[in-house]
Image (cartoon, rainbow, N blue to C red; front, side):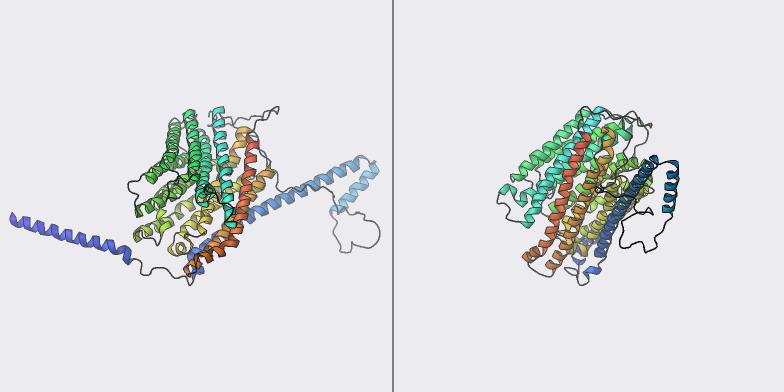
Length: 616
């Protein structure tokens, strides 16, 4: 018995020693995994991340050219059809005034003019200008050149409860207010890059206004717009009414109070500190969290009471986004484990999850409804949507630490973030393929409507921005770009190029169908091109400047030299930002045109939609 006990004790001791040795070795892995402090930058332009980013930017440029060619072709068709109409009208008028013999003569001349070809010696000196061959069809002193083509107006007005219509309009109205306010602050901050001594007032300082800008467009514009659009999707795809409208209005109040109180606190210098996008102090952010919980409960109960068996893929994304963001808000603000590097890890998790699991996931859920409904066709593949959903949930949760590569964080944790960032190729490719294949066969709609171009730009930026983010997570590109203006360009590529463009597309697709009024397509076109060109100028300038700035730091040049280097790029940043800001003003006016009450005007004709969703 004693012998067995001694042997057992010896074996346990050996196991403990082996385990101790293993743990000691594991503890030294982060130190052994990085043989040199920094990577070499001799061939920085040949880096896969750099090359990939250049290809992605070229892809955006190609899409812009495609849209321009389609619009130009539409304008040319417009002029051709106009000339044909004018020519036909003139011929009718001429024939009307002629006798029978004259009519035959005119018709023969027109027939000869149709087959006439230039010989090359038609120009001659002397004599009056006479068009005997019918070469000139018309002329005018007022050509009325259209900048954008007119959209085919939708004749279908959806019958929805007045309470739901009012809810959607008020959510979107509040969102647009915060968009204009937040980007007004952003415009002022962009001017500060050009004129640093623009003011000397504490509450107008960059450090106080910058979080006002970011938090306002995050929690005010995008969040309210998503929830407002989501209420329509939840009701429509569940073929039932909203569970409780009072809860929806309480949430609307809580979120707007969050923005109002939070921004006042920020300009007064009262902030959480140390965490990007979580500058609001916890009592303020608690209002937002309560609003999210109430929204989730309202959405969940609505889906639970659905009148159809299936749960549409949009509802997966929307409920998933709400669940993850509630968890995110709790983790991001609990203080117990946020000391030292622990706070850095939580910050990376919070910052990236806020973009990926709230804005991206929710917005993708909206696209899965509004894109196919706008094209009047089903989504290309339900299976691809499910694959994109679950891989998004899997990979996005671990990529936050890629913002802290070469930091004191454990090397293995940085590696995990990089690997999971590369894994994001799966949901991005699956989602992009699904959306583009849904658009297949509808490319001609680009010349007829601005809804599809908004969707197209958003989907392309979804692929480009997400893929570029994965490339940026690689150690070399992270080493060059991080903490430079390149990150500002990347954040606008995603939050603006993806989220905002897709939200605009959904709004333009929905509001005319529930209000019966459309904005002037000229102004929708102005909105689109100002926003797109402004974003492109903003993005390219900061990407180029950020790259040069990162190389400047690596070369050991002083910080102030990099500031001087960035000056011309900041000029283009201001130009691009100004175009984007003007587009928001145009968008706000378009929204007003879609929702304003028109006294004395006839009510739009309502054509019932015969489907399983009539009883919403």
